[in-house]
Image (cartoon, rainbow, N blue to C red):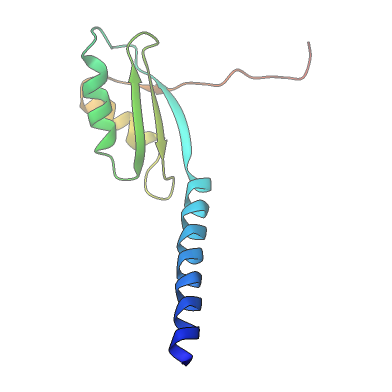
Amino acid sequence: MIRKIIFPILITFALFGSSYQMSAQAAANKTVTLDVPGMTCQFCPITIRKALKKVDGVIEAKADYDSKTATVTYNPDKTNVQALTNATANAGYPSTLRQQPQTNGHH
């Protein structure tokens, strides 16, 4: 009888706890854009994307030939921008962190 009552409660807490942990992790992820000027053909983004995905902590990597950029979502507890730029450089495509436009509040 007690098992019938306690077991569903434990399952509920276990499910709630894991979903809470996932949402907490998702909030901690960072997304950056890298400028990759060395992309010279339509196949370059494939190489860049593969190199970035090999970095531990990278969640998603996209590379775009037209804009010559790579957009990377990663866990900052596991990796950093330096590791990402190293990965593209080691694949033959040096990259730099795209600087966001500065706004000074004056129009």
